[in-house]
Structure formats: structure tokens, C-alpha cells
Length: 479
Image (cartoon, rainbow, N blue to C red):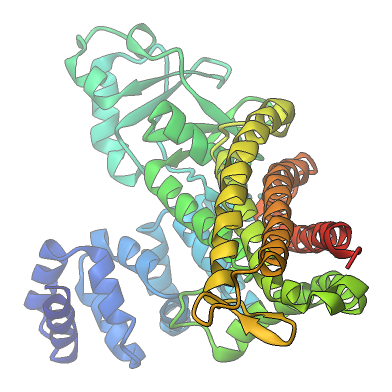
């Protein structure tokens, strides 16, 4: 169906069928039309759409286009066409566009923008990126608390089309302080002579313009909101954030977290619109950082290689990858839960001791079970020949019968004990480190997803190898 819609849009544009194009905008979602138009290279065809289609659609359409197409249109538009486009766009959508544009394009838009819109754009551009102020909109319904329900409905009919949402009215007092909110359904069922102050919700939720956008998104989830007022430091209402803004924020934050956990800088554009060199630049720094961090593991492995006990029992080297992987996997499970809990405000760094006690018990149970299973499994590996052990110059396993001796049994049990005990201790420590790192990083007001995972891998690898070296030395130094 999406393919058919795209072909229909492109056909209507290429063949210049205005009636079909108008019908398309009434029946096909704007985002689908924009995706089709992103494939058009001829700027005259793009301009044709904006000149034929009703102005009630152009603002939303422009906001959904790619940055490349938006820049083409702004550059090609006359001042008159650009003013018309801006008049049908919300300030926050215009700001989102301008943030990705060259300086000369931004200057031209600000030059032709109506005075009120230019003021709003400049205000939004001045807020720190990823703050509530940077994602809010200044087009909203704001009324005094002494306005009657009848007059409020009249204002909605006259001003509602220019507002981001009509489902929440923000109520202020004579000093412009926000004192409540009124939902549209409450307004409809109220008596005409009642005032907004009589029916408004007084237990409303707000945020500050400098609050982090992720904290705002968590408030929307916690209080099941579809719009929230944004206050400045004087507690005056300066804008609102709506649920569609929050959906964009949640997607952006999720993409950043996934990129951070994968040690890749997040892409600014979509995958297909990002150049090969840009993608390489996102990956190279983290690969180099992880390469440097791997030096610590290399140092420990170098000491292990030179250790006397590993010369005597070389089979111990075969278990090193398993030890490193299992420790990392144990910590990785915990660190994912910690990062998720921090991002959703389920707990804070101040809850460290409560969390560490809980995770310590959980880690002990998991590590004990893993340790016992690994002891049995590693013994099976040695007896079946998966891991080959030589006794007096001969490979011993159940298939050739050389394993049924006390010497082989003692050797196999000591190897299994050393490896499984290291796994037990390593898994336990990995979970404790996986709790401490994200909470510690978050306490420093840094993103735990970016820092914690590479540090966890390095620490657990080094600790596991040091523990293994110590245990193996104690177990086999007498040989």
C-alpha cells in the first residue's frame, strides 16, 4: 500500500495533475507524501506542489521533508512564497529546520519572517540543545481564569487553528502566572456562565525551560499527559510541549542510547542520507578509544603468557576467552538494567546502597549456579576431548581410554576448579561493577550509556584475568 501511495504521489507531481494532488493530500498521511517527495531531484517539481496544494497542508508537509529538500525549497522560494510558508508553520518546526541549515539560509528566513514569528524563532534558538525550551512551541491557547466557558469556546473557534493543540487550555491569572489547565472535554460539558477558574485543574504538571528533554518525556509518561506548560525562571508560562514533541524526543533519546551502547556517535540524518565518510567519522573515535583501553587487557595477558604455571599447564590458556566473555556478559545484563532504570527515573544515584545490596544477593546466586554448572561442563570438555589434555605425552579422553587414571582425574578436576572458581568470582564482581559504574557516572551528570559499557568491559577483563592467574598459581604451583 505504501509503494502504491508513493507511486501515486510521484505520478501526480510529474504529470502535474492538481486535482489528483489535492485529493492525495486529503486521503494520504503527510509523512507518506513527504517520503515520496524526498526522492524528487527537480526543485521545480517541489515548488509546484507548494503552489498547488492548499496552505493548510504546506506547513506540515515542509516539516516532514528531509533537510536537503527543505534547503532546496527555501533557496528557490521568492520572499512572498517563503512568508506564506512560514505563516503556515509552527515556530518549533521552523527552528528544527533552521538548526540544520547553513547560516545564509537561516539569515534569509529570519529576514522575511513576520515579527512575532521571528521573535519566537530567536527565543527558541537561544535555548540549549535538548532542553525543554528547545523543543517547546509558542503557539498555544492561553486564557485568563475569569474568562467564561462561552467566551473560551469562541476563542478556540477563532484562534484554535493557529495553536499547536486545542485539547488543553492553559489558564493564567492577572499577573500572568499559570494557575491551572482545562481540557477540552471539561470545557464542552461545563455551563456557559462558569469561568475557567471554576473548572480548571489545579494539580497541573509543568517543567522549566532549562529542564532536560528526557526528564520532560519521563513526566509525560508518569502523569499520562498530552500537553505540558513550560515555565521560565520567573514561573511565567512561555510555551508548551505536546505529546508529538515527546514522541520525537523519546525516539531521539533511544537512538542516542543505542548508539552509545554500541560505541557509535548517533547519526544526525537518516542512514541513507548519511555519507560514507560521515559514518566512518562516527565509528573511528570509539574504535580507537576501545583499542587504547584494550592495552590493560594486553598487559595482563602478557603476564599470563610469561607465568610459570601456564607453561606447566598450557590447557589453562584455552579457557581465557570463555572467562572474558562470561564476565562481560554477566555485567552487560546488569548494566543494561541500570541504564534503563536511570533513563526512566526508576531510581537515582542516591539509591546506590539499596541497589547494591539487592544486586549483591542476586549476583551471588547467579555466580554460584554458573560456577557449579561450569565445573561440571569443563570436566566434560576435558573427558570428551573438546579440550585436549596430554598425560605422559599422550592425548587422554574417553575415546582412547587414557583418561581413566588418577593422574588425569586430578589434573582435570584442578583445571575445572580453577576455571569455574574464576567464573564464579568474575561473574559476581562483574555484576557489582555493572551497578557501580552507571550510578557513579550518572552522579557526575554524565551519560552512563556512553561511558559505563567500555569501562565495564576493560575492568572485568582485567579483573577476571588477574583472578585466574592467582587461582591457577595456587592450584598448580606445586607441580
